[in-house]
Image (spheres, helix red, strand yellow):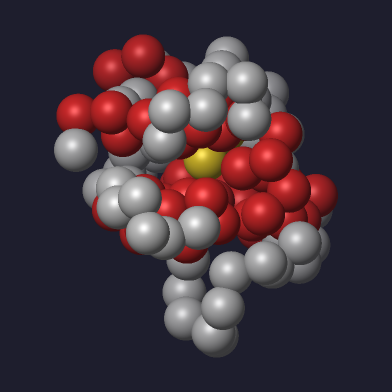
Length: 110
């Protein structure tokens, strides 16, 4: 990511690149930006709408480091995050991504 952009802008730039049907974690995004201890800040940015504009940000593709849908409370309706992921072919069981390791997308590979 570029150094002249804010951390917030870089988070959004990474989230926009997560492929459909894949997931990543808050910590992986933070680590890719050189701030591995800032996973909570990534969640805060996305949960509080600190990104600009009304464009679609595929934040439903971000889960915790174990594949759990910990960010689902930020979506309208309790099942929205799960439904969005399932619409992309991601299987969810007990609030967790099945085959998490297989579907994990590492933003550090950018």
